[in-house]
Image (tube, rainbow, N blue to C red; front, side, top):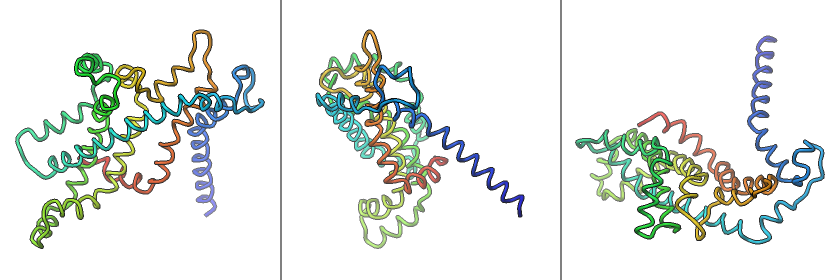
Length: 272
């Protein structure tokens, strides 16, 4: 009995140490955001806190504009991915047709390709068709980042839903769309929530596409961080404050849908 208590105590201590290790970068980021530039390398934990870094961010209103731009393209990309990805995942799970697995792997391969490899031809195409530096242009390319993950997670959920349930509902007089919306969608809700949040994180933090496919009209927060790097110095405090504010949507979403996120990842990530 005493031995079990010692083992349990050691496990708790190990988890506590790991939590401290994992959270330390976030804690350090918070500390830096309240430091003056002159104290950045001279002090560690003992310093005079200041809100100047946050005042600089919000005084001109530019950062709020960058934040809104990032929110528009990220939410737009996720909505487009859901509209396209849910039917695609259902088709790959339910129907047998020639080349089905090849098509599924092609979707997944979009995540394998380095962004820098495809961004140059996309840049040239966008210049010609007028999508460069537009919301729709970024939304369209960002769905390439989010769509493969969504399809592969949701495909596993659709495959676990019995076809007989759909047939029984059809015999009761429901149309296919009624069966899909009222019966299938609620069953895949955890996977849909998890894949949407993960896709949102990937899109929100994307740097390469935002840097090269947008300019002055549309600027995301990841690209805006470069504005705090000048020719003679780096404003670490302002950059840290900007990173913290940019992380708020992801943190809030993760906490709000934590139940669905854990269930969706544990059930859907190993399927497909």
